[in-house]
Image 1 (cartoon, rainbow, N blue to C red):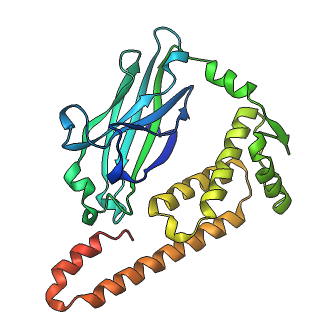
Image 2 (cartoon, one colour):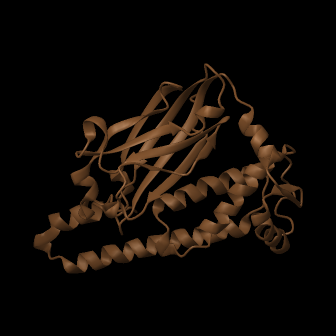
Image 3 (tube, rainbow, N blue to C red):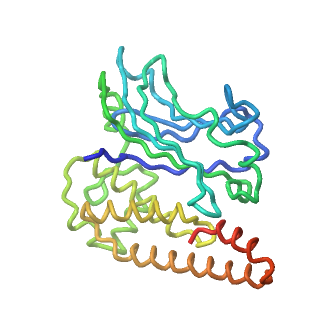
Length: 282
């Protein structure tokens, strides 16, 4: 059976057209026993300089890994087309990362002319969205530093979950409003329990946003997270209802957009209308 990706993240690069730095890093995220991050060159890098948007996956904590470490990683990088996800640019690769190869990716991920053209759908409201899916295939030189670091972080017990002080109020409110939310969640490992709770807090924050701020990618990611939490034993009927409402609103918005577009075109403009329709993700 093909190994699935262990982590999926969405990185939104804001104010893309006015960025001054030649390179940007995403926040760190954990896959396996290592920290990772995305590296983007808005103006390109290497062979793609001044021609293409360059995108890489990079090890973020190489200094904490033992001598001779290696990580065989499967990853898929996507530059999201925010008008039609079917037109997104996606690349998939397997690479060995080590001390001499801390990053791998695509110097020519997407032509800059295509990326910055707002009519192409990759740059919307000044934002470019990137999705990364990452999975570990093989590990040489396992590190326990990350686990030890997580264990010694200051935490507070709330209903059997070790959470950060900044999360206490949010977790307390969850159990106050939904007392049986974790009644069937049986995992005992505290790191795993904390990981699931972090996912739940992120999900509730995402689904509390207005529909206008959520893309189809956001909703798809929310669905995956909700499914994972539900399978783990969380009772989340209220979030399932909220996600359905957001999806329905999204569909209504797209249907209205199509209707508005159709009213602007005559029969003679049918070809142009069809091309515009392709830019909408339904």
